[in-house]
Image (tube, rainbow, N blue to C red; front, side, top):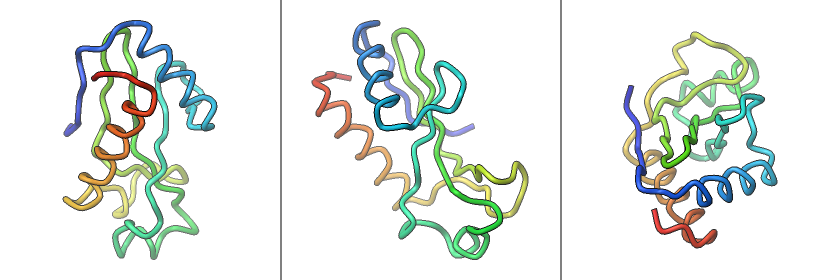
Length: 111
């Protein structure tokens, strides 16, 4: 699995991040797993084609006590296996990492 990780967080910082993600309604139903939505404009052609049946599309963000891990696999919430489930391309990968970094900065998390 490919991912972007930050492993030097305090327990308080990850708790603050989890609280913000819950407030943004990104919770997955599992305590430490959140779904970050992929911007519609950044979907691949096959994801756009499958959006009605397979979407919405998300990246998984997993929080641990002192770290976080953003998986770079674009998942389809409506279907487990499909051609539209694939790794983020360079543009989407850069966008989502920048989004996460900005979220950490907004929450004053040094990461």
